[in-house]
Every structure is written in structure tokens, then in C-alpha cells.
Image (cartoon, rainbow, N blue to C red):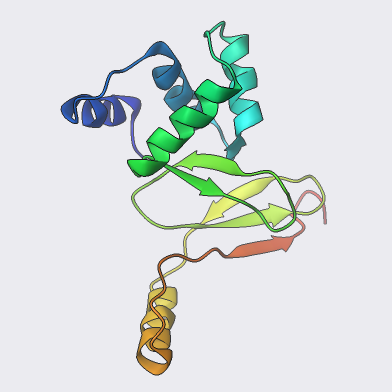
Length: 141
């Protein structure tokens, strides 16, 4: 998992300013147990008394996405987009339809094999994929 200091150092090295809003947003994203919505980010910033508004949040999310620090996720069962810090490895999500909890799950290299097979057999270059497992967690079963 990327640490706050690593992300801030990466941005500073790139010549980008570390504003209070930017730093606070990254802290919230790192500290969030689940992918968080822009509205959730804004609510956290307001709670921390960080001067920010909806425009600031969306501008910063775009900035962080462009630098591959944050990724956007939209679960099939929701209309809202959510955001999380990009970790070292690609992962998927287990989504409980009961309590709405979300858990990260990493799969072995089999998906990459399927992507290569798709490229070879169909000439289709996969740029990204999303895989969600929806069901009931142990507590909701």
C-alpha cells in the first residue's frame, strides 16, 4: 500500500504543489476502508475544516487520476463513482448485497492469461477490466 509520504514525494518530485486540500484528500483516500465517492470526500474535508468545495474535489480527483495515484471505480449496482488509491497490484471487489460492505480481493495471474488469449484470438487489446463478485458476506448469510 502506498504511504502518504511516498505519494507526496512523488508529486513534489514532479514539481506539483502540495496544497492543504490535496494532502487532506490523499489522507482520506488512504484512510478509507472502502472506495469513497466525491461527495464522501467533500464531507470528510468539511468535517476536517479544510476549505474545499465540489469543484475542488473533482479537480483534484482528475489531477490524481491523471497521475495514476487514484483510480475511479463504478460498481454495477450503484450509479455513483467511487475512488481509491492505486495500490501495487490490480485487485477486484467482493460486494455484500446485504450490508453493502466492499472487500478487496486479488486473483492470481489467470486473468492476464485470458487477456492475452483475447488479444491473440480476437485481436482485441484489453486496456482495463472490472470484476465484481456480488453476494452476501459471512455476517449477512
